[in-house]
Structure formats: structure tokens, C-alpha cells
Amino acid sequence: MTLAAHQQDGLLGKTRSTRESRMFNDQKMKLGIFSSNCSGGIVMSDAPSGFRVTWDQQLEIAQQADTMGLEALVPVGRWTGFGGNTHVHAVCYETYTWAAGLAQATTDIEVFCTTHLPVIHPVAAAKMATTIDHISGGRFGMNLVMGWFTPEMELFGTKQLEHDERYAYGQEWLDFAMRLWNEPGDFDFTGKYFNSKGAHAYPKPLQDPRPVLLNAGASSAGQRFSARNVDVNLIALPVEQIAGYVKDIKTLANTEFERDLDVWTYCLVICRETEREAKAAYQAIVDEGDWPGAQIVMDTLGIQSESFSSQITKFKESFLTSWGGPCLVGTPEQVAEQFGELSDAGMGGAVFGFHDYVPELRDFGTEVMPLLKKYGLRH
Picture 1 (tube, rainbow, N blue to C red):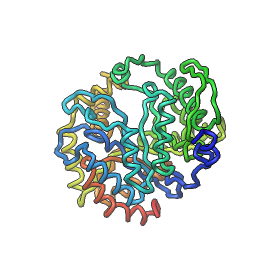
Picture 2: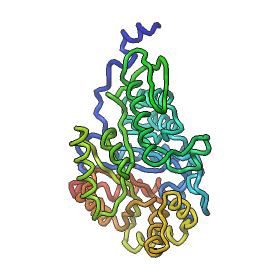
Picture 3: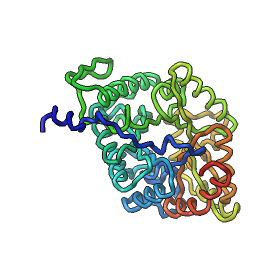
């Protein structure tokens, strides 16, 4: 069949999906699973857990989340582990192929990849993203990462750009991808970072004008990138700082770029029958925590100060339990109340992980989801 014939048959993506993504539904507190594709998940600890990076577990987690009505599956993109005692995230499924596999195995949940823009060319990324969007029937999303862990960039022989320049690179990357997803015919692309002659990509995504986009930028440059481009800004903050942050970045998106933006957080959930059991489970993670690994991550992020040693210890604890995000610890009632606190502070959603994903997600669905409905956070 010729290209013209494909176009006549609508196979070039001229006809876009009318499917409404769960990401844009009317749930007050949207929910998703985070970091289940990497060893350790959201935890850096040797505390005993049945969680393993196997395809059987990935399928069970994804299908449970889909059946429960959660909005998203968001993986972490990793090309190397972090060292330390556990070498956390050293065992990791690549996220485009992971998303393609889970898209085929689920029916409604939005399946994301996490893509490191400095090491995936826009032409390749646009084509892979469209393929998964078609596999999923229009429920594929992309978590855009500028590349922050220098050893990963060095694996590809890629120079780590200065912080703000990473977002300039990311903007050009996305501008190129957007043209590939939407522009008919061939075009030349000339920029600072990319030059392409006769560029095109067929078919187009089912989602119009692009897959759902997520970004975790928190710096000034990161916030501007999110406000300008994506659907969800993913951020971890103390509860008392959430309201101000959410107001500022939503105002930025609305006033400077005339668009809406949602803000989500990521967190660890430890839910047990009693508060004592939940706190003991949390403490076990801390006691067996990969403190050297947490230090490596903090050194990479530049979080270090000998003047505030007690504060730095708390930072380390936060990274080894939830990568700097909140920890929701307690009985089902208490965990539901803590989700409510995040919602009241301005969060539109949360992606979360567990120490042992399969059984704890099952218990979450049985014990916590009904309470979230009771409190008006879900329906």
C-alpha cells in the first residue's frame, strides 16, 4: 500500500482517538503506582521483602492497579545502579518496552515510560511513543527526564550539560518531537542541538496532539519547562510548602503559557492493621537502610552540609525510605487521612510505591480505597 493510500485510509493518524484518558478524569485525588520496574522500588533498604523485578510481578502489579481503577503506572528510568550496599535500581526494566508489554496486558490505566532526553533521539522516541500509543489504544504517557545522574550520561558518552541548559536542550527535543507527532509531510529541523533533513514520522499518535506528559522539574528552569509543556508536574515537598508551590506553578502555566497544569507527588505507603505494626515496618526499612547509597544520591544532587548534620541525617532517611517523598504510615484510616492532607494542601494526585508491591497493593485496594471514597477523595 502506498503512503497516499495509508493517508486515505486514515492510517497516518489523521483520525485521533476520542478515548478520554484516566489522567483527566474527575477523581479528586488521582493515584498511580511508581517505581515498580526497578530493584528496591521506592525503597533503599535490605529489610526483607518479597518484591523482585520479574515480569510475573510486573504483570500482577499492573493488572491489580488497572482493576482498582488507578490512573497511572509510572516507572523509573535507570541505566545503572547507585552503588552502596544494595546497588539499588541496578536491576531495572527499560521503560519503553516495559510500557509496551504492560499496555498489551491492561485495559484502562495510563502506562508511562520514563525517557532520558539526552540519550534518546527525538526521531526514535517519537516513533516508539506512537507505537505504544497505538498498542494501548491511546493511553500512553511519557515522563520526561533531563538527565541528572552523571554516570548514566557517561555510559552513553554524553556530556552532562549544566543544569539550566538541560532544560533548553529538553525544550528543543520536545519541539522536534511535537512536529514529528503532528506535522504532515517532510520538514527540515535546524536547532542548537538537533539538525535533521527530511524529517517525518508516520503514523501519528492516537492522542491529540501528543501522549500525556509528566515532568519532575522543581528548579526555576524545571518549573518553567513543566508550566510550558506538560500535563503533570511531579514534586515532593513537605505538606506545609505544597499550597504555595502549587499556586505559583499553576499561575505560571496559566498567565505565561495560557494552559492548565496539575501537580502530583510521589510517596511510600506503609499500611498495616495497627499503627504500631506500620511504624515497626517503617523502622525496619530505616534500620536496614542503605545509608551509603542514600549518601551517593544526595552527593549527586548536591544535598550536603556539615553545618546541619541532624538535618542531613533526616534527608538521608527520607531518601532511603521514599526517595525524598512523603511516607504515609499507619492504619488504613490513617493512610487515607494522610492522602486527604495531601489533597487539602493542593496535590491533584500521587504515585506511590510499597516495600513489597504485590501483597501491599492488594491490601491497599481492599482496606484503603473504600476509605478514600468515604472521604470524597475517590468515587
